[in-house]
Image (cartoon, rainbow over all chains, first blue to last red; front, side, top):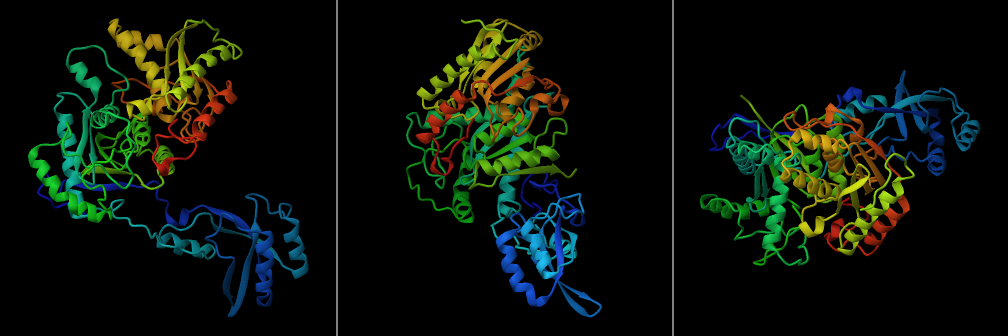
Length: 358
Length: 189
């Protein structure tokens, strides 16, 4: 993870931490499944593989190699997986009849062994898996820039936006308040800002607190209002690849920041490999597709799902919320991020955490 | 408005019919056809339908629409948060499709008494399909200052085929509002 050495105030006190969609599992604790295997005569290997491929496909175990070579007292032994075995029984009852026939005709002596259930996600995992039974390992080929790693420049703008969210939260005094800033990362333009609205209203001495007006929900509504304002007619939605780049938004940032935006546009465009084919006509965005949100506090479950609905691409938050947080929580982060992936095939969304080093 | 008996499942059908009317209204407005009604003391006190397209806000689900109507009314009447919580604890919601995770969390925040739904929401369901937020208490609560999430009674499977056929007729024509990559059945529920 790149550390940040920007001109930002508090430099060095912040760093970006990626919250993975899966909990890291120590390599030696990876889940396994039982399979029936047998020592085979090397001469029969090809025939057996051909026959087994017809009757016993290891559907969910594509990463597991069918054959394993072992050296026992100087002799090379070939071991072959026949089929899946049930978890508990050492019985052969659950074995398909075709396999049983194969065992019979080739005089195979079967045994149960463990293989890794899931493909390895790292070299360390893979090495550990191969101690059980060889598997194949394909390092991720996708471009992880912008997912787990950030360039110096990106980190700096991320921290700047987070700082603006923190400042927004500070402005409502004396209370723990969440604030949200929605940003179009291709232009670094602020699309919406908000605070927990119940807090604002409370400070105005009103006793009513809207139970759903958390910062993220309000920010979503603000971005929707902006969409309605900028595109009053229901014109067709622009292509996903065309990130809208508005010049005269009612919610734009200060002129000084605007300048920065203009200089950043090109770079970020190149970095994300995006062509700015939109030209001068801004395309209407589809909800918040491709946008980032900066939250001071980790979103609750309602807000987290809302952000997925609104097609927010990435969530950055400063402080984990141990009571109500939806993303850092083991079970939920697994499930929600799974949802996030299914909802938007083309944009992998990630929850990122910016934590204080103080 | 029509009164109906919320004690028995059998009495749920007339209520669900009203929710389905809301869903049809949504369909006529080119929205994902999901509708709901809220019942207090056997009277319909609010109804809502999906308005995500019109508002360009994907969180404007039927449930939040209906709850917001009540919150607005009750706030204008000057009800305190405690009063509002008391009212919701007597309310039953009928919705044509299982509340999504967001809505289930929201209903838990306001402390609704009971929810009846039509078809399950396999992708985003928050009442058993993906998460079971109706069964949990403090664990999923929002910040204590706001409100504690409460569990609620939840029954699904009421007039399922009607709910599904509405959704089917919407998706058969293809969601005209979604951009191409998202144009596949069942989303935005």
